[in-house]
Image (cartoon, rainbow, N blue to C red; front, side, top):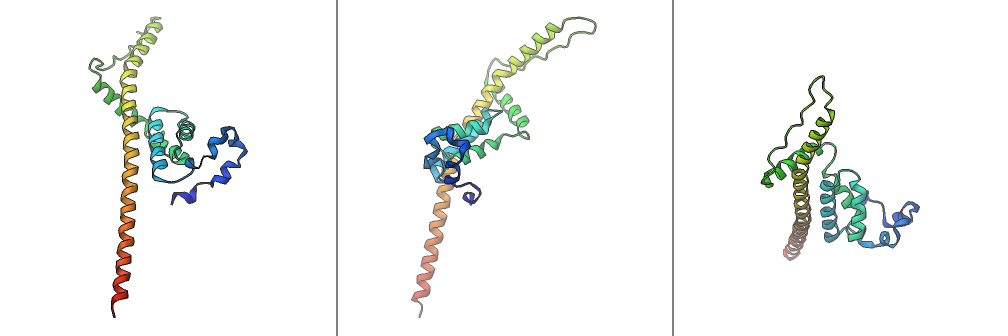
Length: 186
């Protein structure tokens, strides 16, 4: 089903814009839709979708080329994070990291300088401390979520692919048996 929406390998190989990628772009594994290349593509896309907030699609495409994973699946899988999901993802990542780090506690609120004072430097330093307090739990939470999404995506694709193959074989076997029954009846 996904094949009809993707450009053909020949179209991409002949593209002048992609020649800088060299022979790696000619590798058939980055264009095949099989269980291993799709599973690797989903894992790469999910991991980079969580870890790289900007430029995640080009990053996933480059990593997919290096890992010989399906390039289009890797690019599409990065869309697990998008402008609509950044807030919930980063909030959950912070909460997860804050829960896992024993000494992190909650980050202190930066205090605005009192009215009439020129202590803006104190406010800036307080804001930087606040961001540093958020940073460690946030990075840990995002890393754990990215690894979990990549592992679940990889093995989930393998499992769904296997289930699909089993169901197809069962359907073919049942059709063959029904055809044999019809042929045997006088």
